[in-house]
Image (tube, rainbow over the protein chains, first blue to last red):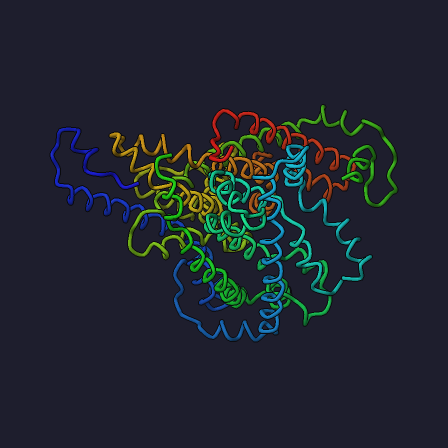
Length: 293
Length: 263
C-alpha cells in the first residue's frame, strides 16, 4: 500500500524519493502511536486497578495511575482459589474445542465453496439462519439433551458442540476459500487429487491467515466461555478459569484489585497466542505464481 | 425454535400455565409505541456501528499491514480491547464517557469544547455506543488483516506499471479483492448489532428515556423483568424475521459488488 514517489512527482513537485518514504513512514508511526494510546486503555485500566490497594479501587473520580504498587495482589489472588487446577481444566477443554472447531468447520466450508450439490444454496441459507438465532434460545434444549446423555458435570458439553460445526466460522472460511482461484484445484484434480487432498494440499496452505484467525477466535471464545461451564459444571475441582473468576467475584467481592490481577493472568495466554498467530498475517508469496491473470 | 413459536401465541408468565391467545401478542405489538422506539434505536445503532466499524476497521487493518518495526506489538495492542472481557470494558467506558469526570470531555475541555452528556443525553447516547463498538472491533480488523494477505502482489505491480496511484490501486485492486471479506463483516456485524443487549444492560439499562433501549434489551425486559414470555417470544420472532430480511437483502445486493475469484 506504500505510495511510490511517482504519485507525488506528478503534482509537479520533484521530491526526493527517500524523503517521501521517510515522511510516509513517520505518518504511519504517528497513526499507530495514536491508536495504541486509545486501544491500550482497557488493559492499562485493569493493570492499574490490579496494583491498587482495596481502598484505592473505590475512590471517585477513579485514578488512572496507582499511588502504590501492590504486587502481592497477584500471588494472593491466584492462591485464594485453586486457580492452577482451573488453568489445567481450561487448557484441556479449550484445546479439545479448538481442534473440533477447526476440523468441523473447514470441511463444510470447503463443501460450500467448491462442491456442487443440489440444494446447496438452501443449505447455505439454513446454516446462515442459525446465526440469526440468539444463543440463549438454544441453551435450554441443549441442556435437556446433555442431561439425557448423562453428561452434566463432565467436560463433554463444553467441547462436544465445537465438533459439530459453527456457522460463523464456516461462513468465514467459505468466504476465504472462494477467493482462491479454481484453476489451482483443477490442476491438482488432473494430477489425480481427490477433494480431501485438494483441501489439505491446496486450499488450507493458501488459507493460513484465515485459519489463524479462526484459531484465535475459537480459542478466545472457549477460554472466556462462562455460560456453558456455569450451567454444566457442578464440582469445583472441574471449574474453568472463567467460572473460577466468577466464583472469586462472589466470594471476595471487596477484593476487586485481586480479581483484576487474576483476570490479567488469565488473559496472558490469549495475548501470547495472538502474538504468535499474527505472524501468519504476512503477504503470501504463494499466489504470485498465478502471474498474468 | 418451535417451542418459542408456540409460546409467542400464549400469555405465559412463567408462574401460571400458558393460555392460547392466538395472534393477540402480535396485535399488541403493532400498537406498542416502545416496540417502535426499540426498533428505531436498534436500526440506528446497527447501521451506524456496522458502517463506521466496517470502514474504520478496514483502514486500521491496512495500517497494521504496513512494513514497520514493532508490527507484532501494534497488532496485539489493537486487538486488546477484544480480549478484555465485556463487563470490565463496559465499566471502563462508563467512566471515560462520564459528563463531568470522563476522559473524553476532559480532553474536549482542553481545546475549549463543552462536551455533550454522552450516555446521559438522549441525542448522544447512541453515538457514544457506536463509538465504543468500533473501538472493540478487533475481530473485524483481524479478518481484514487475514484477507489482505490473499491479494496477489502481481495485481499491485501490474496496476503500478499501468500508472495507477495509491487511491486507484486501493479502489480498483484492494477493495474488489477484499469484497468477499467486507461482505462477511457486513453480514456478521449486522447480526451481532441487531442482537446486542448485554452492553446496554450494564451501561445504561436502556436510558435516558429509552434512548438506548435496543431491541434485544426490550426482549430481555419483557421476558425476565415483566415475565411476559409470550410477548417476548413474539418480539424474538420479529427480530429473527428482521435479521433474515437484512441478510437476504444483502445477499441479493452482493451479486452486484462482491467479486469471487472462483465463481
